[in-house]
Figure 1 (cartoon, rainbow, N blue to C red):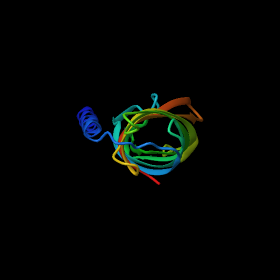
Figure 2: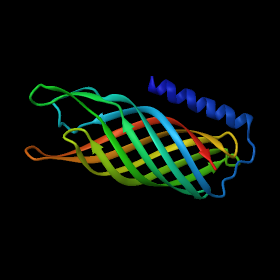
Figure 3: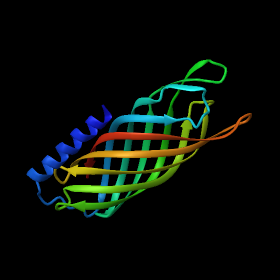
Figure 4: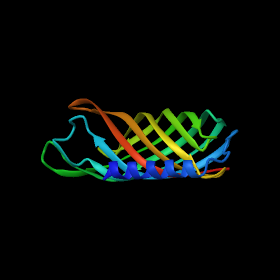
Length: 187
C-alpha cells in the first residue's frame, strides 16, 4: 500500500511538472506545512514482540528559506500507537513524538517547480515506554512540487534515531522511519 501511495504521488507530481513549468523561484521567506503518512518503529529488541510496527502518523513544520538552496526548519512529529508485548508477556502500546530543528539542502529543477532536498537535524524525543525523553537525530530526503509561488506538495522519508537506557537491560538504539505526503504554504 505504501509503495502504491508513493508511486501515485510521484506520478502526479511529474505530470504537474510537465504541464506547468512556470517560474516559481524562491528567494527566501517563511513557510509552514502539514504532513500525514505511515511510521515504522524498530525497538532494537526491547520488546519480546512488536505486533503492529506500523502506524498512521502526522507532522507539522515551519521554516524559512535562506535562499533557494538552503532552508532551516522546526518540526514536530507524532506517531500513532504501536502494539507490543513486553518480556513479561503483557501487551502494551507505545508511541513516539519529537521536536526537531533541521537544515535542508535543496536542489531545485524545472524553473524551481520541482525541488529535491536532504534533511539533517537534531532535537528532543519522547517515547511512551516509561515516560522517557531524550535526544533524537533526524535525517531524511524528499521532493516537493510547487504549484505556484505559495503552495507545494511534499513527499518525504525521515529517519528518527534515538536511544532508550533501561536500568536493568542496558541501552537500546531505536529508530522511527516515517514516510509522508504534505502540503506546504510559503509566505
